[in-house]
Image 1 (cartoon, rainbow, N blue to C red):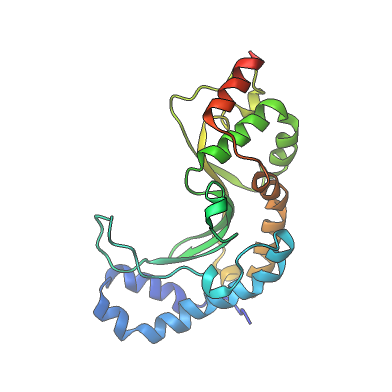
Image 2: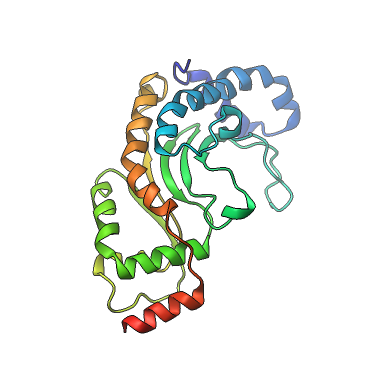
Length: 237
């Protein structure tokens, strides 16, 4: 049962920042398991009940939800072997039939000095984003009804195509959305007392429920090719 993270959790993240090598990690593996890995798994298990009500096809086995601390060094200039943070991901399993939308999901992350949670697309899925662009053009109010209630509770981070201009006919509130490549809603957690409390589960669950309607909307959007989207834009101008 999740009882909260501890001072040891944050001390470990700080220690691995300054001792990022295999010798230190192996010597302190029990510390990592006790203070970091185990509470992350317990938090994942505690959240599975609310997440299955949001999407019953999510991968909710705790060991699949919790990240590894080992870094993938194959394509990175930074050869530090370990991360100084961890995260939980809650999304549908990736498979060949859902490549364009599989990384839509919820997350929670924690490190020595910060923590946050939210939902979104973290990599480009152009066919799926084209489907959203179509909806923004043809059904703007449906998206606005979902987005507007979130603006006071969550920040929005967006990566966008610099040369993709929104059509003039697009609703003014949606012009920043149209060129989006990826985006996510997030909320920082600066309350360390909360992070060290079982009450963190309820705080996260409440936030995820708030994000659930727009998650389902985004999840169910059909993909759209560049050619079909261009035709729709042309027909509307």
